[in-house]
Length: 272
Image 1 (tube, rainbow, N blue to C red):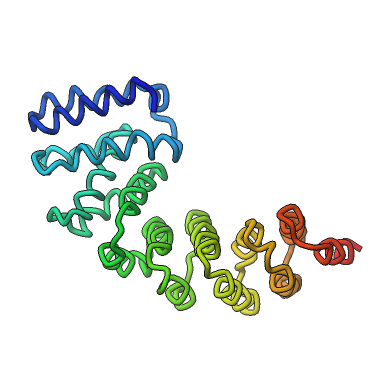
Image 2: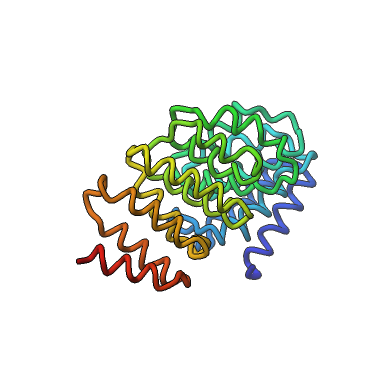
């Protein structure tokens, strides 16, 4: 964290302790002049983690009236909306009278980085029960943004995550599919690789256009430890693959990550 960001966070914390609207807005204006936010560009996950989350924690101070935070969610600058999203997440986790309805707005924000700030904030919980109501409501939602956010939170409920995904109709929206890949890889790396492979095999057999998700998930380094299962799944995808390139790319990724010569043999056979 550079000194400019550190100074802004310190100023926001001081303004939050005072609780004076003018002081708070003066401190928040510093966020608008950072190189990472000037011109309202997309914010990186690293910037959200290092800058936005500390700002959100400061804004979650119980001394700060919620009425001062909520207007930030309507600001045109994404950095302010992201700060409000993180603050609402921390307040929700602290049981500070924040409802799911209040979280729906940042969860459905048009900017992915704003939604990511909310996700990162909610992910700071060490109590899975606190995010259970959110997953329960957002996972079956018709909004792809809400469903993607729910899927991204599932690794915090590892005992239920795969069963929920197996029973859920997954939206084909790119954000949803990207969230699904991230969650499946996280679960596989956390000791549930066999169960992830079982789910992928089921999807491959269903012929239900899960090719991109399956290939991206199997391209993760975790899958190289299970070459036989991975090859069986990829073989099942061949009849439904309009373009075999993504399957070949997955095979190449498996080999890069240390899968055996069996993968190369299969790749050569398919290329022929």
